[in-house]
Length: 114
Image (tube, rainbow, N blue to C red; front, side):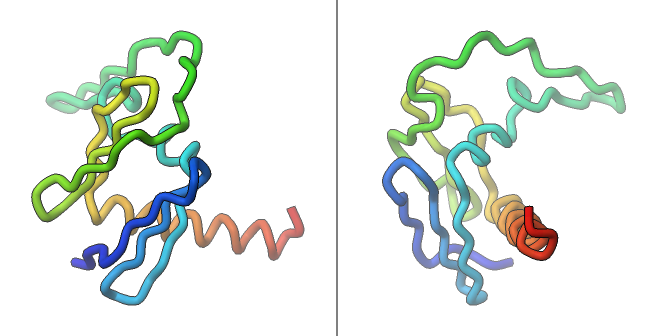
């Protein structure tokens, strides 16, 4: 499994991660927050039954601004957002999948002139 060699916060716009497999991905902060991998955001499945996430209220100021990034063990990061939200743990595997997705999405936009 690939692991990050460098993590850079680019202002309050994006997060760039360089991986030991040579890949470099830039993740927009809005995308990372909207895709936070926790039950409060995505819901959860227990014994094959899916429970949707609770309804979200209005956005709080600072929703898309990072205050702190902490490494969790040797497998993930936890992001603390300015509005106090800090529940999602982004594993290396998930961040790689997100990076691949963003790369494909960006290439499709270029190919389709969107």
